[in-house]
Length: 127
Image 1 (tube, rainbow, N blue to C red):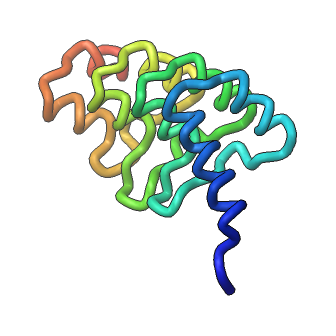
Image 2 (image 1 turned 180 degrees about the vertical axis):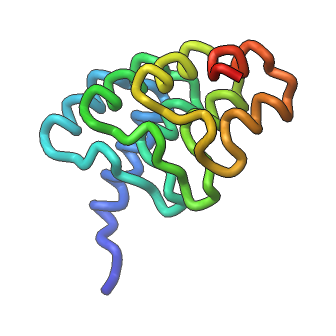
């Protein structure tokens, strides 16, 4: 079965909205029925892309609509570990508020913070 080019283009547009932090446009699509945990061919969810690119407002919105803050991509990376790696404190706080576990994933957010000497995140994680 051949992939539908229009569907692929639509999905690409959704992932681009997450990457660029277009919170309200993305909210409209999710509220209209797009799966909140939609993932791309690498297992990156909308939440992962928003977190990695530093969009705390988008992260909060997706989490409020039911996105799984602990869902790892195909490489075992979580949104929280990505936010720690990218040094995005507001995103880190948003993910923790949504219930993200700093010890989940490979490497975990805790391991990532230790690796890069980010003691402020370790304190947030209670370590």
